[in-house]
Amino acid sequence: MKVLVVMGSKSDMPVAEKVEAILKEFGVPYEIEVASAHRNPPKVEALAKREDVDLFIAIAGLSAALPGVIASHTTKPVIGVPVSGKVNLDSILSIVQMPPGIPVAAVGLDNGKNAAMLAVEILAMKYPELTEKIEAYREKMR
Image (cartoon, rainbow, N blue to C red):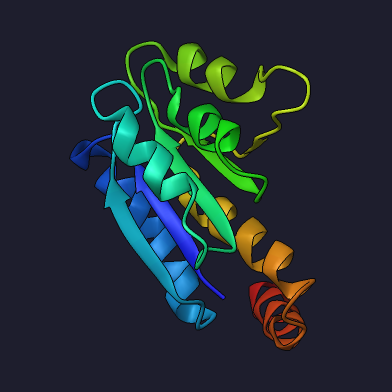
């Protein structure tokens, strides 16, 4: 099991750190990469086609094309995390307004924690040992 976290730029690291904290807590292997959908599309495509990844978390601000571009190159789940900025609506709409047939799940602005939790829940369908960890985590939150 592996999650690939892709950031559009290094400035997205504070959001990626939220993802990282949850994935570590649940013992889910992950990698973090920086790849801009606009500046380095060949790298994004290569990352999206990796066989050793179960799902992707794509963190992007501004035009936030990264989650959709990854989704266009894979049939694996993609969770998009819009990053806040001067025009917050832009990154949100870029992630949630995907064309039919190329879905991207979306969480709230800068909400790396929920992106990681959603990733763990999706992985739990294939790796049932995560279900108990999710239940224990939610009990701890109460």
